[in-house]
Length: 283
Image 1 (cartoon, rainbow, N blue to C red):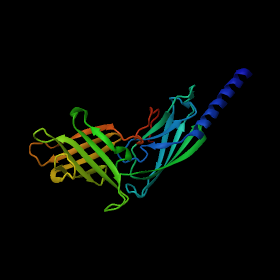
Image 2 (cartoon, helix red, strand yellow):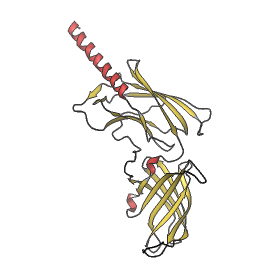
Image 3 (cartoon, rainbow, N blue to C red):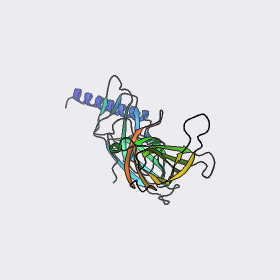
Image 4 (cartoon, rainbow, N blue to C red):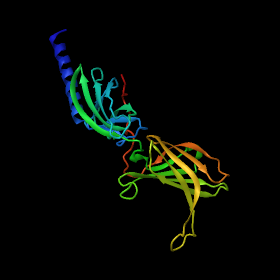
């Protein structure tokens, strides 16, 4: 190998290392969802501002120290996530693509507090590292709020609202409200309303519907009547299951999987906005 070739290769290596360090330094990592539950397949992601991203050959390895209080809200878990860039290369685009993201799928984590030390490694040497702190709960993330439906049952739908409570029986916790737009045994449109606290990613309770006076000035003079029981299970980002047991014998009891149809404006998504280019590997 002549000196010119060695020099060129040395410059290329320095360029890759510099780009990698620049990428790591600019990394603003976060979890998707931002407030994950035990049902979520979590992604560690970041928005790319430099116009460069890692190539497809990124090797991700994880080591975890389990907590003595495993499965409780006070459990603490410490992880080290090594991102090996040795054979990945650095892909740069010009001009910079708008809203470009990259991330690493790490799967589901147990309930508790988690600290992940993310280290960018190249040729067995750490280029940069940062820590991410987050909590995993057993209730659906804020992104659960919105409209849901089952494609095979178009024409019916579910509205789910996660609302923080300021006072009352569970101050500081969250109330989950489920409105189900469906039909009665005669095919007439009706609503079933259920609300309650979520645990183990399920909210369930007595469902009611109402009758009232025709639309006119003044109060509706609502009359509440029991509809049956219903539950909504959060199965992870944009996935859920609705189950019901109706008092009306003309309605068949059952359950159906639903997906997210629409979200409120400004809601942070539960998924990384762009493609995921690596996976978490448990050794």
